[in-house]
Figure 1 (cartoon, rainbow, N blue to C red):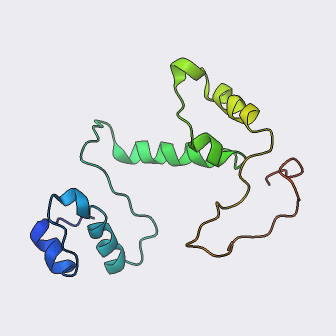
Figure 2 (figure 1 turned 135 degrees about the vertical axis):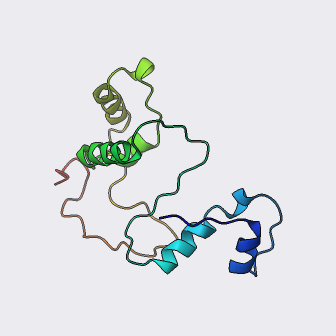
Length: 136
């Protein structure tokens, strides 16, 4: 499903926002509008126009999802904070080992604290430290 938009439509949809310039300043507004109009959709994807992919989009997204589900929860934030460069790091397992060695304290456990979410909505930890946690 798609919402096609232009500068004039955005002015009608969001009359209180006066930001002259290109559509790049409003890139999330059509996505929010689509989300509000279609609450039955759980996931929303926005592709940038500078993406060049000649294969099947379903396959690449399906493969990305299945790969991500196999990744361990432990040190997730720390791996995501770094770039994996195959020619430099070698295998992804080697990259993960490097990240683990750089974080002997176990890294971030649980959700990252944010002013927008005053308290954690998830379950409480049963272990006091990351070393005691089996991440099950």
